[in-house]
Length: 228
Length: 228
DNA sequence: ACCGTTTTGTGCACACGTTCACAAACGCGG
DNA sequence: CCGCGTTTGTGAACGTGTGCACAAAACGGT
Image (cartoon, rainbow over all chains, first blue to last red; front, side):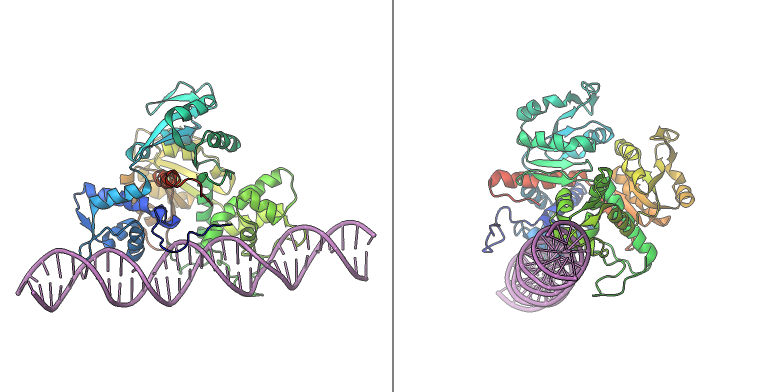
């Protein structure tokens, strides 16, 4: 059933592994910092240290998107910033809709991370009519009934779900029905979506529980630790 | 309650893989939902479907923490809830301190996920003296200068960093100096910590960029998708 | 008491990700 | 122009995680 993209070359346009894709944004951020400090080139060792990974892993990651970088010298910072941005698709612009204007939705709307790199918050929506019209971070809250219209109007491709758990699946279904193919879910539920839709989950509770596990382990068996 | 040394020896106390640990909280949440609905037993197939994983993976995960579950029947919901809780260390209580009372800190303080499972917010702290004394979700904001005292007083073992990027490493160093060994970082920086300290990172910007990558991929090559 | 049905637990094979180690490439100085 | 130190890119070994397929085990009906 799974059509193997035969191993002729892993270099297809989308041939970057998931693990690598997850690290590229980190490299990008670190590189941006270097660029602002006026650094022109970095070695894999320096960049890897700043990104918190091993040099070999970094080089392999970068090699997956092409042979940028000069032997004996390192990588040109600005050029690499551009290449990673392009590989991640950040040269295009994406419209985002945030559903749910509770504490979390508030925080997300105010988060700087949206504007900085090709993401634009098209709208905030909420089910509570009392909040409609409210201004948050320069964006007016609209009612969730307008969701379909908003998505069509702004060509929204990414939906952020910051609703209570009970409403999340319903909102998700509506987003998907409108053609949204990427969802970032902050609600503590497992969303079910069609195969072609990507869902990423951010779950505070899960993170805490993972930390709790390691805390317990450290308490039981002190002295032989090694973290990522 | 005793250590099971019998059988094929993969059964070490801390011998649960990281990937499994990351999924256990999901199982736990789904199981809690079943318990509240009055369901007494679940099969691996049902539970796996609700958790969004394959049945085999679920069974293997659960097998790593013992042979609970009855062949031909399934798993006793309440018993499994207890066992997973215990494996994750949730039978103990952990005190958490949240540093940074911006939009995000606000949202975190109000998040229900803390109280529900063994986590208690010992304090909110902020560097801005104007916010000190403010009441958020029933907790009084204290100044970051008191951090050391608070940690000692409440035996805080988990620190949550919700500060701007610039302050994060500094706060982290102070937490670690006070003996905190688990950190949940929301600031968009790579924290450097000693080996014995666990750091988990939640980064909205990274998640969006990962979604952007997949959006781009889908736009270039529509029709042959397969998500996790 | 026994047989058939159901479901777990797990050995095995495979795919994926990480790390190591080294040859190929580059700049520089003599 | 050549040799030397430096750094990339990558093949190969290794470890980890995943999925399949099946035997062992429990329950219920007859």
